[in-house]
Amino acid sequence: MSSSLKNSGVQAGLASALLFGASTPLAKPFASDFNPFLVAGVLYLGSGVGLFTLRAIRGNPRLELPTSNRASLIGAVFFGGVLAPVLMMYGLSSMAASDASLLLNTEAVFTAVIAWFVFKENFDRNIVFGMLVIVAGAAVLSFSGESWRSQLVPTLAILGACLCWGIDNNLTGNVAAADAVSLASIKGLVAGPTNLILAVAVGASMPPARSIVGLLTLGFICYGLSLVLFIVALRQLGTARAGAYFCVAPFFGATLAVALGAPFTWQILVAGCLMALGIWLHLIENHEHEHSHGDFDHAHAHSPDITHRHPH
Image (cartoon, rainbow, N blue to C red; front, side):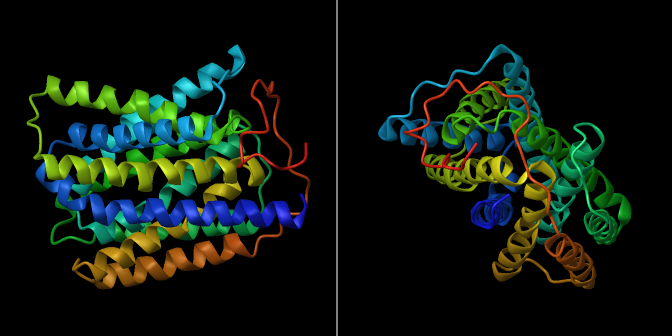
């Protein structure tokens, strides 16, 4: 892998992480007040509609995936667009935004483990040690409340969301050579209405117009644009390493949450130190071998996709 290509992938991964990290504290007020299906649905609807508009303005061609890749896209939409955000909003409704933000580090762990053992990506000893330290930090946070029982269910919900996003990341990696904006747009346009239908089915009441506009905007910026950048990082770095750089997201989210008034506890300090050590181990890992895409039939036009400019 050329240094310039790796650097652009790292930049995309870090930018994606910052945008997604901001989503947790910013979505906290909505998650506390409204049904999790409803919040997830509006967030992803904002992502899908915003990216579809962007795609139309840019004049992207219609996405055409070969049959062999369609199952991966369907699975990514289901796990990452339907299950994960509902679990995340449910857990966030009963947990401090700072704690929930740091727990998102486990997404990288699930992403990497699935990439290593299911999709057979190579891995380095520093990456493994880093993941173990991140898990230790998540364990500290799981006992951060007045009663561990009160934190157990929301913690498990957020860990479940991270597992679903880990599956999503690996499935998206299978189709990452396609246009990033189109892929992210499809996920939002399918996942958003699906969750809204589920919200109506369970009797959720609609929030006021101001809240809807806020959620739509948040979904476009923090979910939609973040996903586009993450797909670029997947394409250039591989799934496990893109997930490792994405670990920056929880720290940015936790910092923003504390800045917005969330309580700062000793558990956050200890977990933050452990997770910082884990990320440092990721960043010093020496990735020397050539990265290449798996089997993928390129069925899209290259010229309109500004994110797809690396040599094949």
